[in-house]
Length: 183
Image (tube, rainbow, N blue to C red; front, side):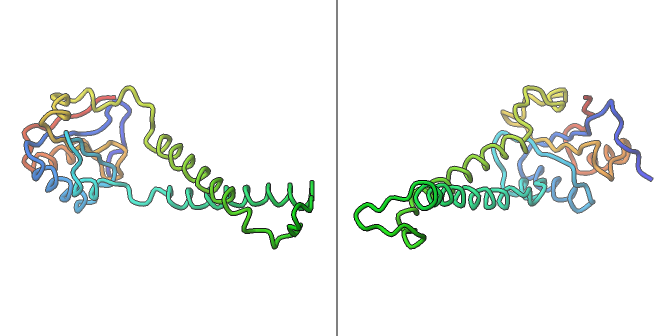
């Protein structure tokens, strides 16, 4: 049985010299079964994102649901105001649902508004922002992640994490340095 995450360690981090080495390491870690890991580099690397990304976050479905909710809200407010609460026959307009084309602009705008706010708010929440401090800042040479360093961190919350075995696994991938990251 694997050791569960201890409270004094965030994970084990490995430093690589090239983006290709980071891509290969992330791929091998995913093949080995590690799921809770993250990569840090001075620029986005599409292949690494595919390996370390958690997959479906549920944001697209949430944005769709809230967009439809916004559209339904916009339509309902207009219908209530024009047909139920304050019906007025101006210029021979019908006072029923056959007037729906006039309600499309507001319906569309509220749908977009709800969807956009949902996307922005869920992005902030799911990314854990604001986060002025992160445990990987304690890793040796981590300041190079914004210059010319490439790092792969396997988190202690991973089901396969074991201090010794994970450190040994990362050393087999050919990094320049492997170290534990304290909380």
